[in-house]
Image (tube, rainbow over all chains, first blue to last red; front, top):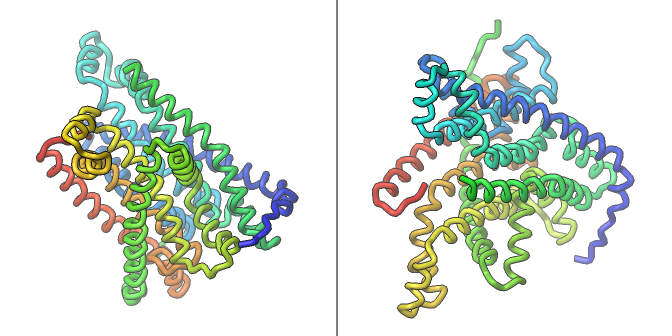
Length: 221
Length: 224
């Protein structure tokens, strides 16, 4: 119980952590953009009148929501290269796993948001001559997105946390660099404490912001 | 063109089954612990005593906003140093996932308890119930019904999160899959089969959950 904490070795390696943070950030941004963008397309696919498209979108969502994201990353890393004629590195495997998983989750959020808009608005837009896509873009989505911003922000926080899974396929991000520092200096306690603190410092303000947004939206709706 | 061959995987089916059993065992352990931790954290968070609600709030926020894999590494590699104890992968994983899911459950419990109208507390008070009696007899039974959907969702998340223990060499389904892939040189088939096992079992659980939700909804007093 008389362990003396020594953070010196961790701070001496701040450069390695900075490289890791850059890797985390890069992966996060790519997955955020791909996940949220693809999610919207799939949400629209689930509403499509074309049956195969509807069916495929549903199957996609169900499959990616009902399997662990780590299994997906490992599948893309170890299994996909066998059937696909492309080189799949840790970065690409992590992007595929995390973005497709997030796309499935955000698709459900978009769907909920679109459904929450009263059907009367669709009818009104049609009555003044708008096409389906026009209605969606000009009337429905602007309102739906406003309502789902807290849920989407939550998803973003989840994506940020998920990036640590890329360390399993040795992609250079914060946790991977932490493992490296810990194995060189035998100080796992300090290293993982610092890494947890970094995530907390980055994510906590965002989480607070989401709470505030939720309250604000609940009042104004 | 690659030729799929599932026979080496199926021949070692028992190997994967052991992993699946361990996954279920870890999920059940973490879930039962997590529900208790969650309820305690929720009560502490709702308490008017500062020395209870402030620490509870900190635990909840820290475990909700840090990645579960970092928490697992902290408990597995870090904690034994402070406590100078032996740590097994199973113990580290159960502890991590109990507290982590507990933090999420706490928020669900809290929201459920807060959602019950103030009048019920006042009514229970008026007929002479104490705070604890009212909580146990009046508030919780109603709150649990309302919390049910989010609790099921969280439990399913927990089952998926347990795959992380493979990284500290606990022989769960994913770990066994990794071993088998290296033994048989058939990663494509192995990981596909394992993904399907997770898919089928998790879909089954969500199916049961939605059936139960509908029954609760029919029996009234239910807000989605």
